[in-house]
Amino acid sequence: MAANEVPARMPVLVTGGAGYIGSHAVLALCDAGWPVVVLDNLVTGFRWAIDPRATFVEGDVGDAALVARTLSGFGIGAILHFAGSVVVPESVVDPLKYYGNNTANSRTLLAAAVAGGVRHFIFSSTAATYGVPPESPVRETMPTVPINPYGMSKLMTEIMLRDTAAAHPINYCVLRYFNVAGADPEGRSGQATQGATHLIKVAGEAVTGKRSHVSVFGTDYDTPDGTGVRDYIHVSDLAAAHLLALEALIAEPVRSHTLNCGYGRGFSVLEVLDAVEAASGVAIERRMEPRRAGDPDELVAANEAIVATFGWRPRHDDLRTIVEHALAWERGLEARRAAG
Image (cartoon, rainbow, N blue to C red; front, side):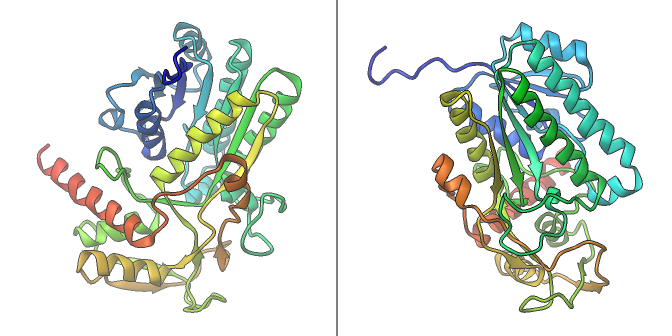
């Protein structure tokens, strides 16, 4: 192989690749030259969100026969698993949906991976696995005590991965996301889910007239301005972390990882709304509401482990940048909808 020749890359399956975070991971993989196959049932994802360089298979992760055919037919060597349900309040109302869609379907996918000889598995997990952590920043060594079915459904999959890797020749990386926000800087993808609950997305919808106001849940937290503090990570930086995880799993096939994905700095709800107003020039009506059960005062990632392990260097670690990319996407989404 010539010195400047890129080694052949194995085909990668991305489940949920038509969704918000999954579509950004597909963009990053394709930009880096990986052959990508997307498996998505399009229940919450969008066909247009899938990079045209990827091969699309429409179907459900819980369809064992389809998954097996896809793994063997495309010679899949690694899986990035994003497919699942992600709305915390819904998980409380309909827990069996989450244990089915998130946990049982992940078990089906993992069983197919073992049977099909797939050696590497990257899992989209969440800071919700920590529940209400005893301190902030949150370290990976802290207890995992989820307080809702969403967090528990993700933690159960983490446990399955750990046990499966101990019994079979497969390694994994669990990435626990904090608050994902923003959009592809080139405007190729962004969050388009109806009824989204993420603050920056909600604020962007208020700016563009799709919402009349933004609710602020709780003003009496033990934080500088009384509102909850969260760690907001740009979706493209998160996608880049998945590529580094993939490369690390391939380089050390007997080693697995569980790592936080965040910037290690938090912003309050009011600070985020101020940033959105400053970037857009539009005032947002703020309605003060009671606290939501289980919301911690502050949830910020300790990210030293992912920086040290993967050499991860975020490119968009700036609230103004995250907000500007989110707003640009929101305005483009409105234009897309107006055009049909």
